[in-house]
Structure formats: structure tokens, C-alpha cells
Image (cartoon, rainbow, N blue to C red):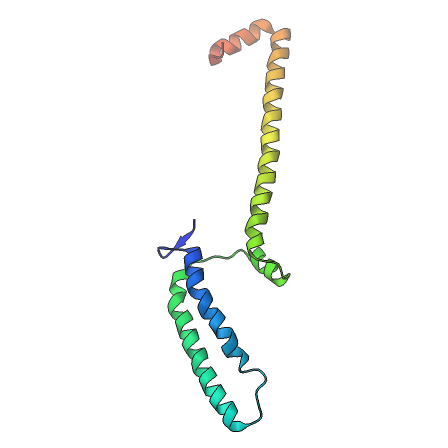
Length: 138
């Protein structure tokens, strides 16, 4: 598991996530507002203070995830509206597929070597006996 500043990545994300979630309703206040100056000022000041406090809290927590490197493909997943956690799943599936392909190639080379030794033994029995004696394969 990746660790940054002695905290696991998932734990650091959990510490920041609630603060980010709390900022969303605060920032929505700055969207459509009532025309009344008094209500806008009251809501705006409270929302501004909440936004400032939330951003200060995130700033305090940034040192826990400062060295996190996110692959650019994760942002592509987000841009496509896909769950970024699917990126890890897809990477593991690709690695398993590649692993199976490589394992198949290794098995094919082992069979080739065995068949080649059988044929070489049939065609060149004395030379292969010397070869095996040198290698210690007898």
C-alpha cells in the first residue's frame, strides 16, 4: 500500500474528503441568490466565512497528500464520467491478461526446448551427451 507522510493514501483521502464535501454546499450559495441586499449580505458573509474556513482546513491537510502522484488516465476516467476506482480494476485486469500471455510464451519456449533436445539427441547423440556432461544435466 502506498504511504505518504506516514499515512496510508486512503486514510489521507478520507481526512480530506469530508472537508471538500462540506465546501460544495457553501460554494452553491454563491450561485443564484435573492435580490434582497440584506439577505445576500447575510448569506454571502456566512458562506464566505465557511468557504474560507473550509479552504484553510484543506490547506492544513495538504501536507498529508503532498507527494501523491495521480496517473493522468485517472483524470480521463473522471472526464468520461466513469468511476476513477475503475482505473485500478482495469489496470489489474490488463496486468493479469499480460501475465497470462507471457506465461503462455514461457510454456511454449519450454516445450520447444524439450522437443529440440529430443530431436538433437536423435540426430547428434554423441555431441548432445558431451553438452549435457558439460552442463551437468545428465
